[in-house]
Length: 385
Image (tube, rainbow, N blue to C red; front, side):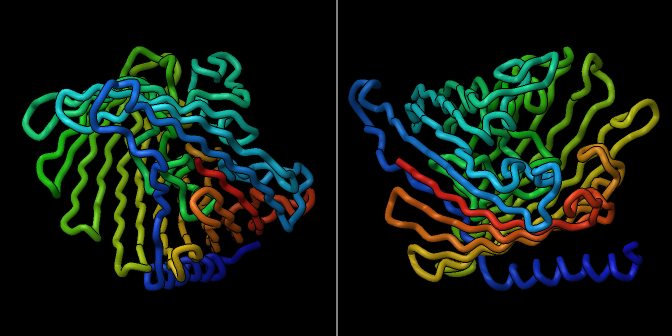
């Protein structure tokens, strides 16, 4: 049994490590497109094609009898070599007033597609099952000749919330494994209409109306609303505030779910970037009649670039699913992840995650025995073209 004092000590240890991370470094990998779209000429000449592939191996030192890593997002299989995803991106960028554009991301693999697949598009609306193929994004864009340029995006797109993202050719994370916040606090994708506008060089906003969390075919007749404010007071510091609200339960437009998401990134030095993600969510009757659900969490990020090729990232987080509305168990989850990454030129990246998870409930397995912690090591290889 874990005593209150031991639980507090563990929680303090997480935040000490998080604080150390915040004093030491993060630099989110934003892989640059290897082909720059033409700025003029026929639109067919402006189409850009990119390829992304991710393969991995994760080993759980507790060797759970289920051969599953509990509460992991994409690295859920223990002791298996996996082709996480091969993703093809075809797009024409919309960059200035009166530009039309589009983007389609097609993904196939053993990890990412079956998690990110949306209801009604490669996820069965009756069984909830998904396969190993997904249309991860598919949207059209237009920039209206209004003020500084009002942008319209219509279709399916990655949810514009959270510090982390689904790994892809132009945005892969500092760590291979994903945070509890990424997996349980927010949606992966949205389908609907998104309007974005840059009010100035330092302030931009976005509003959207979408089908809901991870829905292409809606599970009710209501819609989910979203809003975003991006503030960049300096080139080195960015803050993003997100809000989402709408009915997410099957067959009812009542019992709205609300999410408040805050992210900040500070490039403290040319080698150091610091990151923060804080979430709070609540949903009426998430656990049944009269039983509301709430959750919150904070994650801190630090990455230090020792050279152009080698970086070291540290993440620490605390996710409190106080009612069990998101994970199915009322618990407090914590984790610390250390990730060395080496880039072999433009196209090949190797990274290794060492991760320790904790819970105040015995939700993990040591063999077939319930335990309150798990430790894993992952090797991940990326190809970017």
